[in-house]
Image (cartoon, rainbow, N blue to C red; front, side):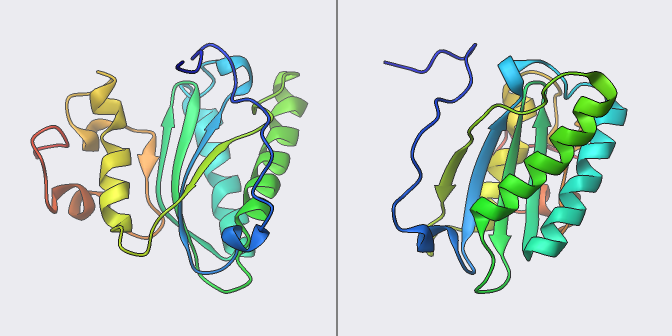
Length: 174
């Protein structure tokens, strides 16, 4: 049975072995907005969140390979840079800091309680996962080409180079 898209991800127990969230691994993460509210259509909100993402990723030793703010959720492709990089701490810190600032201004919760994560296999090309993520706005018919979407980016790669390498037709043509 598919998940009801109008509801947040259920609170689920994390893996017992937290070492799966540590180190120089790649991850694909999806964080829903609280009650799937369409907060991520406002430039000022997204600019603020990008600032928190940059700050938290530096302190937590994560590269943001790709971020993509869809109207009601955020996709991240991230990679730990050091053995002490901890995905759970990174996501918790980012959600806490950005959520606190958002609530101060907007008097509403920003983030759903939980989030979805997938650890990438060593054999997976993290750039390929990034390209796939950048195609989400195209697949959702928000734009015709990935590079037209204003709420995607990378702190590691030039998006134009990333999108244009190995392009299937639905990604983008510039």
